[in-house]
Image (cartoon, rainbow, N blue to C red; front, side):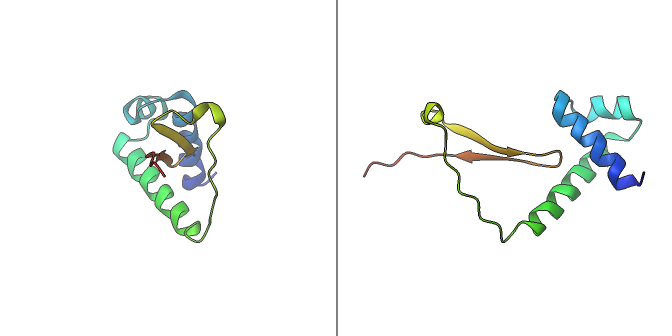
Length: 88
């Protein structure tokens, strides 16, 4: 398996188990700074590929009152949508 695929697997584990880079470094033997750099790099690459993408976001009816809605979370990056209510 190539380095990129190996790092993706480790980062996916980090997301699934909610590990910090330090905890993942202890488990994987990969330096925590290296893991952070790869997470940034993969996230940046995924943003470049999806710059032209449009996604309509519709909050679930029971989530409407919450101040933050988690929209997407991948092994490489996460996105939080902050909703501000306006009166019409």
